[in-house]
Image 1: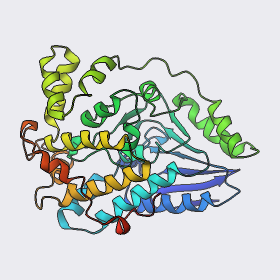
Image 2 (image 1 turned 120 degrees about the vertical axis):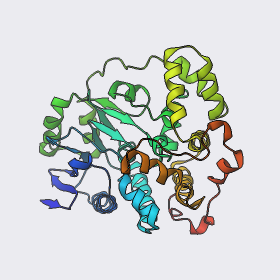
Image 3 (image 1 turned 90 degrees about the vertical axis):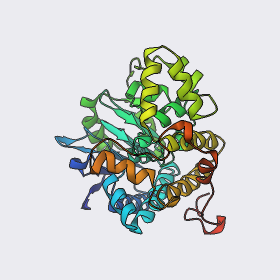
Image 4 (image 1 turned 180 degrees about the vertical axis):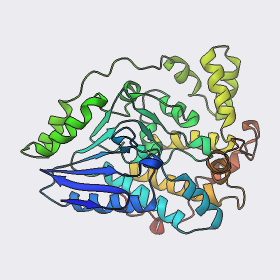
Length: 363
């Protein structure tokens, strides 16, 4: 049985539910319709005893796999944020509910994280029981580039990376490969890209005694990932443990090491305000449950668009990157030296009382 939603393909083969993100031209970036379709099918399969596990992949321009998901549809976010479209609010509430469902799914959720896995793509994979990477995986949470923060539970899963890797990935938006993802607790196993299709097909052809047997079988397909590319853990743990984003930038600039200089230069291009907000987010999330983190992020994203009317860092960041493409965002304030602490703290004040929060039902 195959169902064709406009932008996702779903089918049940054997004892496994299969999802293919089917928006290849947009690198499978998530639309509100896709979020709703994913929520709907996962809720159905969660309660279907015949479905022992779920597998999800992207569709590349040259066929299945090749690109997992590049994030949320940022052009939609820009237009909705600029025009006051209420679907902006719906998108984030429903996306975060989807992220939570995946973490709490209760059955194996197997994410084939081939190619680009960024932003919202991390949100629909990090909660999985089998997060599979390949030699082509390009993973990142690059939200500070567009004046946003690593949402979709990013505070939760980045803060649980070893050392200060979470702060580094959150502030810089740097891209890592599959081997690094495994070392940083952002992936579980490695399967070469040319073996993915075979594993995908076998999942639907096998007979499994129960859900645990599916999980055990998929883990048996993993092969060694090899060495990661990042040998800068000492620098990461030293500098990204400092109290503020300003401290981090200034300390990196004083260090003559090439990696430190490049990292400082990258940070100088990000939204200064959001650098401080993101550092606070990751540090707070370390002591939070997933539900608490997602509620905090829902508060934060509301403030990203509406805290300062007509002065949204996110709308400006998306404009510069994806709309006008001038790559010259006018951040306010323009320098990390000028970020006021009170403005950072405003992002963490919920606009809703606890009982009326859009994600109050998450426990």
